[in-house]
Amino acid sequence: MEARRDPVIRITAMPADANAYGDIFGGWLMSLMDMGAGLIAARHSHGRAVTVAMDGMQFHLPVKVGDEVSVYGELRRVGRSSMTIGVEAWRRHRHEEVEVKVTEAVFTFVAVDNSGKPRTIDPGPNDQEI
Image (cartoon, one colour):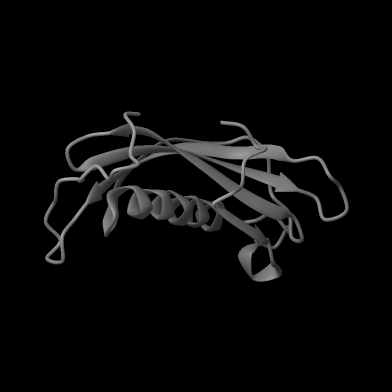
Protein backbone atom coordinates (compact mmCIF):
# COMPACT_ATOMS: atom_id res chain seq x y z
CA MET A 1 0.00 0.00 0.00
CA GLU A 2 1.14 3.51 -0.65
CA ALA A 3 0.48 6.40 1.71
CA ARG A 4 -0.17 8.81 -1.15
CA ARG A 5 -3.72 7.68 -1.83
CA ASP A 6 -6.72 9.23 -0.16
CA PRO A 7 -7.21 7.83 3.34
CA VAL A 8 -10.47 6.15 4.31
CA ILE A 9 -10.21 7.90 7.70
CA ARG A 10 -8.15 10.85 8.93
CA ILE A 11 -8.30 12.10 12.53
CA THR A 12 -6.25 13.92 15.16
CA ALA A 13 -5.22 11.86 18.21
CA MET A 14 -6.56 13.55 21.35
CA PRO A 15 -5.69 13.29 25.07
CA ALA A 16 -8.70 11.06 25.80
CA ASP A 17 -7.22 8.49 23.39
CA ALA A 18 -3.87 8.28 25.25
CA ASN A 19 -2.31 6.66 28.29
CA ALA A 20 -0.55 8.59 31.09
CA TYR A 21 2.63 8.85 28.98
CA GLY A 22 0.90 10.51 26.03
CA ASP A 23 1.03 7.43 23.79
CA ILE A 24 -2.18 6.59 21.98
CA PHE A 25 -3.86 3.33 23.05
CA GLY A 26 -3.34 0.48 20.59
CA GLY A 27 -7.02 -0.41 20.92
CA TRP A 28 -8.03 3.08 19.75
CA LEU A 29 -5.83 2.71 16.70
CA MET A 30 -7.13 -0.80 16.04
CA SER A 31 -10.70 0.52 16.23
CA LEU A 32 -9.95 3.19 13.60
CA MET A 33 -8.44 0.55 11.34
CA ASP A 34 -11.48 -1.70 11.78
CA MET A 35 -13.79 1.20 10.92
CA GLY A 36 -11.75 2.02 7.82
CA ALA A 37 -11.78 -1.60 6.66
CA GLY A 38 -15.52 -1.70 7.37
CA LEU A 39 -16.12 1.27 5.08
CA ILE A 40 -14.27 -0.51 2.26
CA ALA A 41 -16.14 -3.78 2.91
CA ALA A 42 -19.58 -2.12 2.98
CA ARG A 43 -18.87 -0.18 -0.20
CA HIS A 44 -17.65 -3.24 -2.07
CA SER A 45 -20.37 -5.60 -0.85
CA HIS A 46 -23.11 -2.98 -1.32
CA GLY A 47 -24.46 -3.56 2.17
CA ARG A 48 -23.78 -4.65 5.71
CA ALA A 49 -20.49 -6.44 6.40
CA VAL A 50 -19.03 -7.55 9.74
CA THR A 51 -15.51 -8.14 11.01
CA VAL A 52 -14.76 -11.83 11.53
CA ALA A 53 -10.96 -11.77 11.92
CA MET A 54 -7.93 -9.57 12.22
CA ASP A 55 -4.48 -10.98 11.50
CA GLY A 56 -0.93 -9.76 11.57
CA MET A 57 -1.33 -6.64 13.72
CA GLN A 58 2.10 -5.07 14.08
CA PHE A 59 2.82 -1.83 15.92
CA HIS A 60 5.93 -0.21 14.44
CA LEU A 61 5.99 3.21 16.12
CA PRO A 62 3.94 5.05 18.75
CA VAL A 63 1.34 7.70 18.00
CA LYS A 64 1.34 10.77 20.26
CA VAL A 65 -1.38 13.21 21.28
CA GLY A 66 -1.80 15.80 18.52
CA ASP A 67 -0.57 13.53 15.72
CA GLU A 68 -2.71 13.30 12.58
CA VAL A 69 -3.59 9.64 11.95
CA SER A 70 -4.49 8.49 8.44
CA VAL A 71 -5.89 5.02 7.76
CA TYR A 72 -5.40 3.52 4.29
CA GLY A 73 -6.89 0.26 3.07
CA GLU A 74 -7.04 -1.94 0.03
CA LEU A 75 -9.26 -4.83 -0.92
CA ARG A 76 -6.97 -7.84 -1.32
CA ARG A 77 -9.32 -10.77 -1.88
CA VAL A 78 -13.03 -11.31 -2.45
CA GLY A 79 -14.73 -14.65 -1.92
CA ARG A 80 -18.37 -15.69 -2.17
CA SER A 81 -19.31 -13.74 0.98
CA SER A 82 -15.96 -12.70 2.48
CA MET A 83 -13.45 -9.96 1.82
CA THR A 84 -9.84 -9.60 2.96
CA ILE A 85 -8.69 -6.00 3.43
CA GLY A 86 -5.14 -4.84 4.11
CA VAL A 87 -5.01 -1.77 6.35
CA GLU A 88 -2.19 0.57 7.34
CA ALA A 89 -2.19 3.48 9.79
CA TRP A 90 0.21 6.36 9.26
CA ARG A 91 0.96 9.32 11.54
CA ARG A 92 2.05 12.83 10.76
CA HIS A 93 3.24 15.15 13.51
CA ARG A 94 1.12 18.26 13.69
CA HIS A 95 3.71 20.67 12.27
CA GLU A 96 5.46 18.37 9.79
CA GLU A 97 4.75 17.08 6.30
CA VAL A 98 6.28 13.58 6.53
CA GLU A 99 3.99 10.61 7.21
CA VAL A 100 5.32 7.47 8.92
CA LYS A 101 3.64 4.06 8.98
CA VAL A 102 2.85 3.12 12.58
CA THR A 103 0.86 -0.10 12.25
CA GLU A 104 -0.69 -2.56 9.81
CA ALA A 105 -3.06 -5.52 9.85
CA VAL A 106 -5.24 -7.67 7.64
CA PHE A 107 -9.00 -7.71 8.33
CA THR A 108 -11.52 -10.28 7.12
CA PHE A 109 -15.14 -9.22 6.70
CA VAL A 110 -18.24 -11.20 5.78
CA ALA A 111 -21.19 -9.65 3.99
CA VAL A 112 -24.38 -10.35 5.94
CA ASP A 113 -28.10 -9.87 5.41
CA ASN A 114 -30.51 -8.14 7.79
CA SER A 115 -30.68 -11.22 10.02
CA GLY A 116 -26.90 -11.46 10.30
CA LYS A 117 -26.52 -14.48 8.02
CA PRO A 118 -23.76 -14.54 5.36
CA ARG A 119 -24.90 -13.36 1.95
CA THR A 120 -23.32 -13.59 -1.48
CA ILE A 121 -21.44 -10.53 -2.64
CA ASP A 122 -23.05 -9.51 -5.92
CA PRO A 123 -20.52 -8.05 -8.32
CA GLY A 124 -21.66 -4.66 -9.51
CA PRO A 125 -21.29 -3.44 -13.09
CA ASN A 126 -18.08 -1.57 -12.20
CA ASP A 127 -16.50 -4.32 -10.06
CA GLN A 128 -13.35 -5.90 -11.33
CA GLU A 129 -11.57 -9.09 -10.34
CA ILE A 130 -9.12 -8.44 -7.51
